[in-house]
Length: 406
Image (cartoon, rainbow, N blue to C red; front, side, top):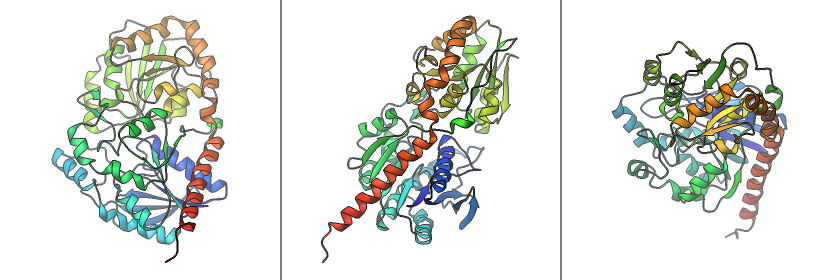
């Protein structure tokens, strides 16, 4: 099978878990004998091919007001202009058309469409190819990807998002199959009328179990809480800092990751305790060896939460928000504790509980790896994606075969 993967970014440009999974899929499918190419946006005009990990990767210069992989937040007017163009960016159909002509794929596996816009769906349809759409975030419902506004999760589209995404649900009928990385995420799109004719699948993101072996965590000294991820408001880092600073416990808090410059400055300004440290970008596997408990305090409906899987696989209990897809990973008193942004003190209470109840902490740590074993079976994930892609191709051929010749 000849597969083209489409995404906003591709390593080394990594914004989140989607880029990690797209690379894992590309290299995994190639190892299984499929022909694989990837198309992502880039910062330089034109189309630029390269080989990365045995996969041919094309980077197409983004035709918009700016390339969206940046630490600095553009001003509000520029951001509005970018999103207006991104409602349907017809100019980005050309590089997709060029790569389709070069690679002659059997199927297109589309991921995050920020920068490409849903014009990509029309280009794939014009080429007569089956389209499989993977949902990693809320881009098709919300220009900011998050459905998070004024410090709160948006359970329904707000007026501005509905205006900027007015035709997206109707356009989604072009999709042959849709994959949600969590059941919660797929159901939210179904509730908004998306993908009425598509075959629907829930395939959790998975990483190689060999890279996630449990490592010892208990040590003499303060209990070490940690957060790793984007430093932004929707991730709940401010909530975590405020709750931790209210606790009189023998513990430290390490915050790993990066964010927009203004978000980082705001969060650092909240810190009044020497027990809190910002450690910058870290590899997840290295960071997990340096903490005892991972905290995932999301205020938004986290689509999945791959870092929670990594932590459990490494034998680290997780305190997580009862938001989005996180409860599909973290289960109360099995591999962690759940808290709720609707009850702000529940986060501090969970940290207190694990700080003073060493027996519970050890029990959760011991149970955690087995609780996510199915989510670390990457070969099973590749089997599932190969089935979804093959089924989309087969149905496409069957449909063409039944069309009468005129």
